[in-house]
Length: 323
Image (cartoon, rainbow, N blue to C red; front, side, top):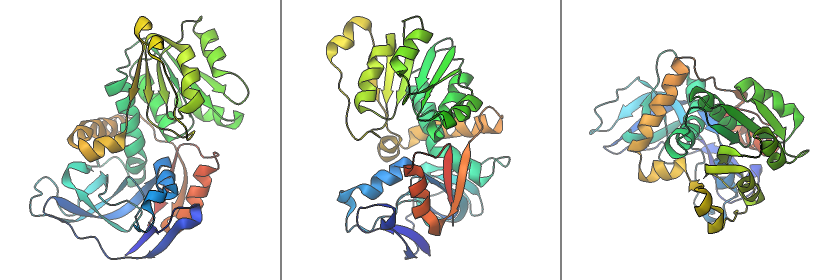
């Protein structure tokens, strides 16, 4: 079968399109013939990670497809079923093996592309807002990278949960309309104005109740200056490449919280807890309460071009690969 592999860390050119052996499944796994693959920034991080040198890894977090075979212990899934999943050894391939606990049936009304686009970003947005931050109806929220896949999804989920005010940050004026179309009430170009000043102005110096931050570094530290008393900051990425710092005196007297989250950590350590979130996300799509934004689709052989595009910071919504 055809797949993308990484033999040595590097730029998009490190992605190799080649023939490899078909995966073999265990008693608790299923084999999926892949229809659509999602491109996530975590794939870029994996490609750059020198710890993966000489391992010949397959990148990719999620995909959708049709069940080709099932292990002897699998009773809830059948051959021919349409599913979306978190594969065991990467998703950039024509066939993948998946633990049965990380496979979710796709409702008939949802196509493969939408289901794939929704899985990682949908589960991440849903869990950070509902499970971790516990956003209440009437509370305000600040969402960084608001025009991206997670950002546009998080805006819609926050609105669905009754957020009183949704503020998004973007890196260019051209991305403002994307966040606005998703439902943001106010969009800030952080390259041209201070998001802290703007948030404080919008909230009468009270700050926002929830902040979703996948950037970290100085962005995190600045965010603490516009987080309201009893507010929750959720950190679920380090796109800036550096950590942010917080001191205890910024937390205890104001009852503010900083909480970490990782969908990959849940996938690796608490897979059953993802099932409820994945099914709720698919239900929101089925009910037309969540619309996935897809910006571009590439052939699997063009994975390097997809990575170049996502690293250009010009992408909005989700990028997909097709075997």
